[in-house]
Amino acid sequence: MAKSKETYNKREKEKKRLKQRQEKREKMEERKANAGKGKSLDEMLAYIDENGNLSATPPDPRMKKIFNAEEIEIGVPKYVEESGDALHEGIVIYFIESKDFGFILNKGSGERLFFHVNQLTERLIENDKVCYEVERGLKGLNAVTIKKK
Image (cartoon, rainbow, N blue to C red; front, side):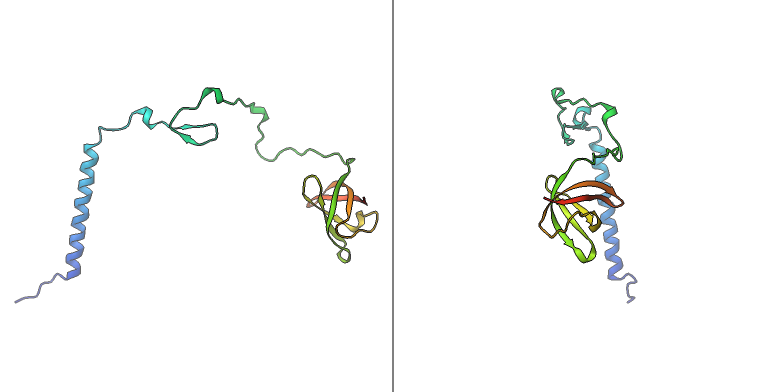
């Protein structure tokens, strides 16, 4: 008696292919049967609420905000020069005299400002309270004309 030329794997692959074709055919028939039962336009609409979230209900017209298009800035905001006359207060949080630089923590805004030893009017150590002016440097704002408080 002759041996079958089909192996076990070939038979399993063929069964799998037939099963996938059958499932695909069933899905197609189901789609055709439900084709006429689509949603209405009102059910398909989505709205955006005042917070920018998607919603199924239309927004309340009383919550509408009106914006002036000229006031909206796109990109980098225009540079507004700060007045150099105003004295700022802060605390020296880091200072290494051998390296000739340090940082001051601004009392009001909490930002750190770089300073060089050439900008000091008197000798400082860490945790000293100081008054200073602000100047724009190459890498950001710098503290200048620093005086001990």
